Picture 1: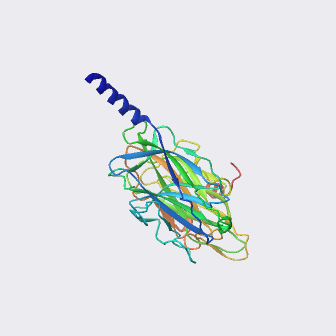
Picture 2: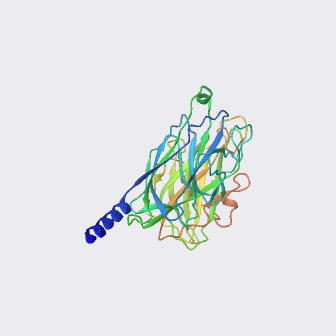
Picture 3: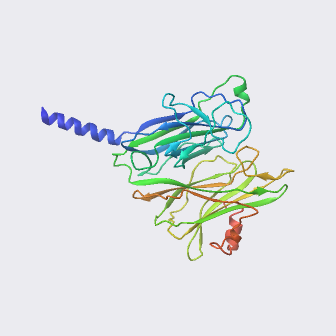
Length: 345
């Protein structure tokens, strides 16, 4: 009998380590009344044992949500023990009135885990790869769901919203995950003069002794984006494309089309080609009438160490351009042409 009990405990332990658990992250039937509202709500992760996120399934449409982000935070911008589904306005750069308490997305330890826009489909990570969250050593004690509501007409008529993402997770004891995933986000500030094509560019040198294996990329602009491309420039000056796409198509994470690794000393770089058809200058900002230039690199590492520096941002035009950056120098003509066109996609 004792042997049978031990065997049952063993079977239950193994079953638990293999089981995928659905973790829904939804807005709690919110009703924003101000256009261009950014709302956040936080989810506490288990403190004793980490988990792995292996799939993201959106529960949203572009007619309601302009975009959705999931952040990992050490401390969220707002948290109430007596109201764990508290919602706050996390549009840190937006002005105007708000019926919600205002606070940043994360108070500390901010990193992007996932991003969605334009009716992108669900994302399943490659076999063996997972985002490590919770536990005593990940720095991700909370996940924060951020939803941007560009248009609120439906809510003025009484509708509410539960947009969000359903996560598939595995326990930290699983033997199904041996590669840790993370995101390096490249982006710019800057301005785009009226009736002009502009290149918004960013670049950073990888300073840490970590080998990155990119497996997916995502592009993001608002209405003026025509092409977004990301590259790695080797220490010998050779360039390799990580990915390129039309940012006005579904803004999903697309697979990197070849095996590529990024090493310490390499430069990661991105360009957004923007065409301003408007009669006024457009600036980078949070509203739908502003612009953004983002290139997300989703990568894994063999082992547990990911980049400490998870963001690569520049001031953008007119103050920053690749040709001004001493870490880049002269851009090869074929790279310059490739970065501004979708002809070969």
